[in-house]
Image (cartoon, rainbow, N blue to C red):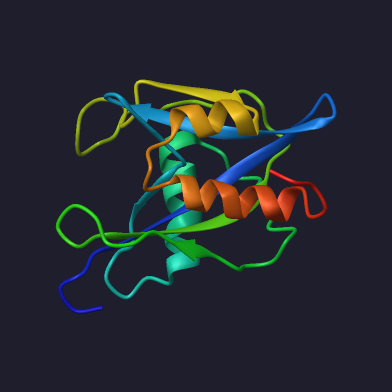
Length: 142
């Protein structure tokens, strides 16, 4: 992937009151799943787990559907974002201060259902969200 930055993250979900809730983080006006740049020589899955913990303090991820992933088309300066799916039992998360930035990377977080998530995420992320929905609800129409 010469010249292309790979970002890796996780679609974190919780089972809550008979429905899956998605964890979204907001930076400026953009809502997305926890993710960040994969470091040189780092396995993307390891990078995705590291980024989730750095951005949210979550460290109880369960990749119950395996390690399949989906990627966005290139955006920005050719960056690609790769997303895995995992569950957590944790509801309350923290948005810790980034040592690099001196403040948290995100202003807020929320747990939302699929319909709310579709309204919040960018067009670039919607196909990723739809893929996750198919995994979470294998026999339902979207």
